[in-house]
Length: 463
Image (cartoon, rainbow, N blue to C red; front, top):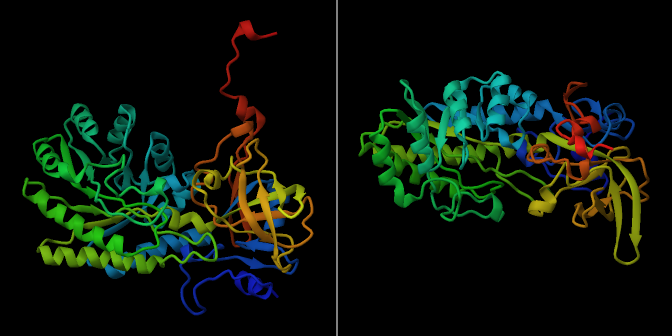
């Protein structure tokens, strides 16, 4: 009989904490996908698929995405806003977390809109069938071509700066361009320096001191249809107070816009809710985050005496981060007496650059013997020619690890594939979508020919 992953890990000394039994689990609070079990072969199983079998069939490294976990997160966001906010709302998937046709199609099928930050992400969303009315183009330096793409598709454009405003006025035709204005709220939160975007010293958004000037300019441009305002305070946030503060700040800006004849309809509070990467992480649930955001905006609107605007949010990591794991095959080992043991895998910084970039922490398991106590600290090293290519330092794993075993790193759905590279000319991994015992390839593994496809060798260099 199968046991749940959480029960099995508790039996073997691990503390993979999930919400208490009997409550609806919030995917961002779980280290593993919601369908995770340990089967009779003592193998890790996700979406009804044996992870060891998946590696044998599709190779490694391998991204394994659980469809049920992703859909559950989408529904929890959508339903929570309907529960806590009296006005219209729209959840927008921040596709920079993982942009591919299958992921965008799943999010869209659950009624979500799409946040894109480049022409490539825009094309992906459109090809996946996302309604252009629900696509919002972000970016602090959108190219003229990207702006033209968005205008042609009739997407919303989140305007970041004066250069963009002026370019849009030049590009406008007979139909006004739907825009939102991104403003920097000056709200600090405890997260990594590189992913804080709400404080004043940020490359994103108009400075608060420019608000009057921006509203005045936009109100005088018939070519621009200003629908609303946007702000985002950062990523991987566990605090609720900053988001509560953001709602009231943005409603103040909303009322200020009316002084310039702008009738705003949309208020976008961004995203930023964190997920659990290690046992010590304790993020709020999706419902708790939405309740704080929706309630703060509701109360601020009531206090200001204005109608409830359409409330938009842009979760990314908390939608997909915990829905995916990455499976590797273990290679060689190196033991330095009284210092550490390095266990090498067949991937690393090219498929997960977050540890070397953000010093991000992860947890891992040996998928082919899940009941073995994870008590031996080892350092999981990538295969790239960089001393810093280490995925996890002092990761507790079973004793007597051997070459050929399957190692799985948890919670790798956000910014792993999106930031993957071909460093050392290593092809990027494949990805499979698992659901009810079925595994479908959603990203084909790159080949050596893919790496050479865009190379050009001048004739004079041919020998």
